[in-house]
Amino acid sequence: MAPLQAQWFVVQTLSGQEFKVRDSLLKRRVIEGLEERVVDVQVPTEKVSEVRQGRRITLNRKFFPGYLLVQASLYDDAGKIDQAVWYFIRQTQGVIGFLGGEKPAPLSPEEIEAIFVQTTEGAEAPKPKVDFEVGETVTIKNGAFENFEGVIESVDPERGRLRLSVTIFGRSTPVEVEYWQVERG
Image 1 (cartoon, rainbow, N blue to C red):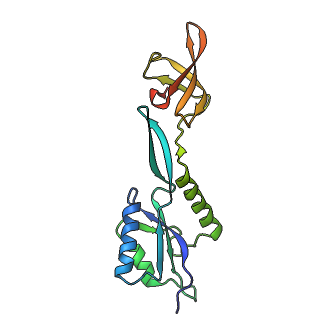
Image 2 (cartoon, rainbow, N blue to C red):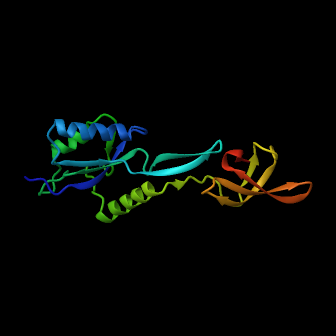
Image 3 (cartoon, one colour):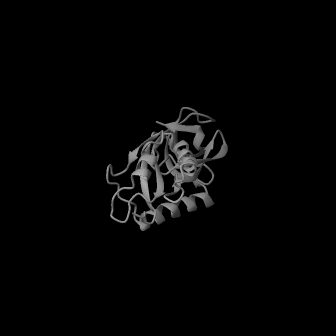
């Protein structure tokens, strides 16, 4: 039986092993002659920027930690699982299994498109990593107002700064600090 057109499936991996499993699958498919049936393997990520110690750094964050996407011809024309592809993926070191168990369902084209749109948007402009919310109480751990508590009035993710309302001598005073200068109270 001829394999159907390749579809996208979700494969669960050991946490932190996503890139290692991806590289292994891509390398082994060539060695074992399965390039036609295992077409692509992706670990969806986005770029996230944050401010640490006053410096802006950019990190790659996984959308689905512990999972990767595999584009493969897993089913033949009769709807039966292609055993060669099934065992090739399942027996890769670091793979736990397919999402969906013994009869995994492929992702719909709409779901795949939505995932890849998010990853391309994240690659174009790094998204700020915001850990703070308006109304949250934090403690200033560095600077002139060290050990004072304040309530977040606004968050400026582009600059990595917070505007806090700090009570000094019974009066509310606005103070602007960087993310790294505060900790949750």
